[in-house]
Amino acid sequence: MIAAFLLPAPVMAQDQQLVRELLSRVDVLERQIITLTGKIEELEFRLRNGKPSPQQDGGATSTAPISSPQDGRGPSSADGGIASILANDPDAIFRDALEAIRQGKHQAAAQALGELASRFPDAVIMPDVLYWQGQTARRLGDETLAASHFLEGMQRFSDSSRGADFLVETAASLMQLGETNDVCAILAQLSDNYPNARGLLVTRARQIGTNASCS
Image (cartoon, helix red, strand yellow):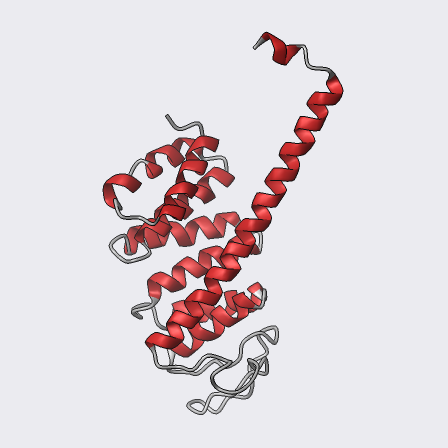
């Protein structure tokens, strides 16, 4: 304890610089994890719905929007990142949103997800839609909107496969917004409500709890 106060200023400055570098690397890793998760979920979604992957259907993913045969509209101009928006097919819209996320086109993804949520609020995939709305809002720098999506998911779909994700991401957003008093109360529900939560999510929850000084 006393030795810490006797450290020369250059050493303390070096330690602070190291901490900043480590935090920067953690942020990069989190972004990479989100991108990889988007890729994995796109593949899982294609497999569940019998859709071929871009490699299986013989070419690179098209970035040109495709017009809807149902409503006769022309191509969508959603930042050039949505492959197709079909008027009555929420699965197609969601698949395109995941592809936009994979490509880093978060504004296009946000537009597609918002359209999906407003037109198909009772779709089976709504838990996933809300989760990715939250992640997309976060990538666009709107943590308040991200918190809103995650909290809505936690309230509406706590029993879904996304329930634990909503809980932890709500806590993460509140932490970023400075609402630390609520963070600990939310995280305390994880082990009770989701005893089988995956290890990576539990580790993330512990990190958030440490940052919030949860006991």
